Amino acid sequence: MFLLQVIRGGSYSALAQNQHQILQKLVPQRGEILIQDEKEKGKYFRAATNRAYQTVYLAPREIPDQQKEITAQKLSQILNQDQISIQEKINKKDDPYESLADKLDDNRIEKIQELNLKGVHFTSEICRFYPASSSLSHVLGFVGFEGDKRVGQYGLEEYYQKAMEGEPGLIQAAKDAIGRWIFSGDYQMEPAKDGDTLILTIDRNIQLTAEQGLKEVMEKWQAESGTVIVMEPKTGRILAMASLPDFNPNDYSSVKDINVFLNPATQKVFEPGSVFKPITMAAGLETNKVGPDTAYIDIGLVKIGEYTITNANDKSYGLSTMSKVLEKSINTGAVFVERAVGPDIFRDYVKKFGFSEITGIDVTGEANSNLTNLKEGMPEINFATASFGQGIAVTPIQLIAGLNAV
Image (cartoon, rainbow, N blue to C red; front, side, top):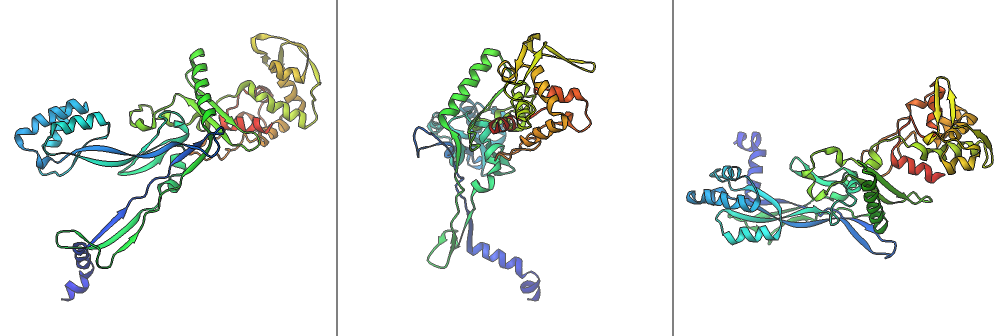
């Protein structure tokens, strides 16, 4: 009695409770992601939502031996799956459940139902759905599997995973001898708490325009990749963020190169080039080393030690003001400003404009810049080339944040 009641009492009590009670988790609904439309105030459009999909599965023990081969053959044709692999699942004689395919379209469901095959069943499953397919894919990320659990991966889905997944509920009730719930007695129920809904600053029309414009420019110049960001200068609100190549988050498993999932706007660095010149000019203006009408003679090149810096297409512009330096994008003019302020002040302003730290944008895995060439004691040529955006690397989101500060 001591052995049964004390030493093994806990395990027997749990066993009895399992026979007499039902304990079931209640699954919460994942929060949606919405975008706005400034032309239609108060109206939101779903960028990520939840949809019920049909899944087809096998119950091998229900399939008669004489029908196994024909069942595998017919399912193979409809599902475009290897017949041998389906046959292997069917041959698991005592198995009550073998998944075959999920997210089935109505056409294939109807074809399978018409066959009226024994041991072939359907079940409904709630999955993440992205109505606009590849639009905003890098910003959103997707909901994938981590083991047997669905979790947000990349983008906002990962960054806001905890907020959007919600909290599961619980129901505990007595059951009768054949397992039916008994609610006439005491039972406990904690309802599931659905996940939070995100409302983005993205504007639908601006986003679509940015995506279309990027596509056209890339086709025109046969570019391998490209990124567009639209930011509201006074607030920092992101109104559009688009990158190509992109992916369809509804079919993320078909992507062969996982680097495609990285958001180039926030997770990849590049040499900014001439668009960095306003940052250099801002440093000169702020320190009163130059003004709009400060002039110098451009001969088309600048020699620094053994190096020679030239303008694009080897052009020279003669007498040039600082305004003209920006208008014509003159490399030697940017070098003139950097040398006027000096390397220490120039480096300080690069940091003040936020290029030495991440912006903190609320997407996962934001990368930082590479300003190694501007460390103290580095050669003069490094600072000269950095004045027109070469020899340093920043993220697009850092660049637009700095330019919007200007």
